[in-house]
Amino acid sequence: MLDLSAIAKVTRQVIDELQQVARLDADQMLVIGASSSEVIGEKIGSAGSTEVAKAIVEAVLTARNEYGFHVAFQCCEHLNRALVVERATMKAFGLEEVTVVPVPQAGGAVAATAFRSLQDPVLVERIQAHAGIDIGDTLIGMHLRPVAVPVRPTVKSIGQAHVTMARTRPKLIGGARAVYILQEVPEKDSD
Image (cartoon, rainbow, N blue to C red; front, top):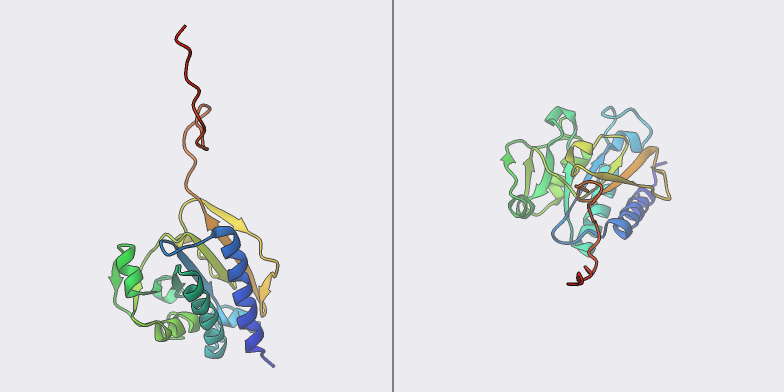
């Protein structure tokens, strides 16, 4: 039997663990990719569960409300991995809206549930999120900023789905003389 409360609890746990490292705030975005099929032990895209999707989406939105970050839910490949976001998120990040409504058969159960759970949902084609959680190997990397740093969760799966997390950081640029931490610059002697 499927334990939806356990799915919600573990989803929230991995978000909390990522938040401890990524420290997402109101100017940052978390991308969620999730296969409800994988959570119940089936092949991705083959057995979507709106009950599982609802447990995941509710856990994510509860965390979003507590921490204040923006969230994007990735659709499946049938919608080219477009993302469900709040209209306010689209405006805040200067994203371009696309016209489509995700349904479990085209978009996936999690994205379809998110679309029906957000206050003013829209879809966008691409983002550059500051962190991400991938539940079921849905491949969210295309929606992360260029320098992704793996974050290892203490739990490795939600249901039967493998969990991968990442935060991002700004690129380190420069060469041998580059400095990455601001330090006091000693004054030169004028002798």
